Length: 302
Image 1 (tube, rainbow, N blue to C red):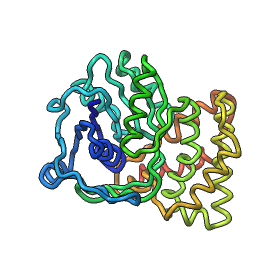
Image 2: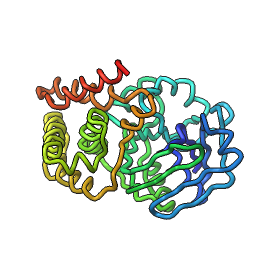
Image 3: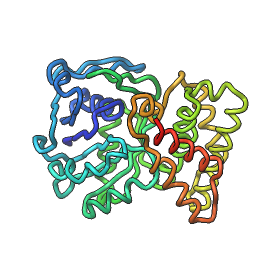
Image 4: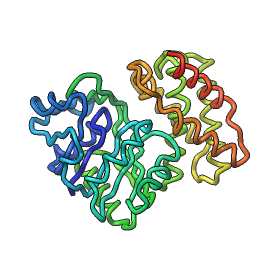
């Protein structure tokens, strides 16, 4: 299949490069490092083995890109309004758009922009960063779960999973609501806490007070999901996420990098939307509501 990457940063750059290296036709939309990648290619420095793509299909505008069978949207969700102009040139009647984005509710809102477009969620479990032109630094993990939101053909979803696996990407097809809320169990505590306390994941885990607070925030997400009828999100999964984080290298999640580089933080879909949904279902998330307020203060006063 032909792939398009919108947002060729730490996530889109990594998965797109892996697919291209495996022989798939991949087209990358780039912004600040377009000229560099056009001239020098794309380097992936990876814990699983580094590699270089010398010849990259790089573009500044989606109008110059071909229509694609699968589009991976790896933009920050704060930029989703740009999809109204970015996506249409890439679409044909059967294009599948995979939103590899953080938070709850992104598919619902993008579907309102494009009622007839097939959407899926991409839940990436990866430690990756792109802090210099044309170089993706893949530090840990790398698997991704795909969840059907509005794809009309399940075989199309399975074909994408197969091609990801052939590219050496551990991939599973999972249930949508469960996948989004499971990702939130890790994302909501760690993204915000690393910003609010100007720290990294390992130090949050080593300190008994913040370790306990992280666990309590995780359980707020678990309880919210259960109030919303989501299956298989429980205390055991929260403990699994704690253990997974213990095994990671020191890491700054995407929101911490956005804060450090003076970019807008993804507060709405990571915090506001799930908090509102939980409240509507009769459950309050007081610790995460406080964290959201702290993040909004930092966003508005820096």
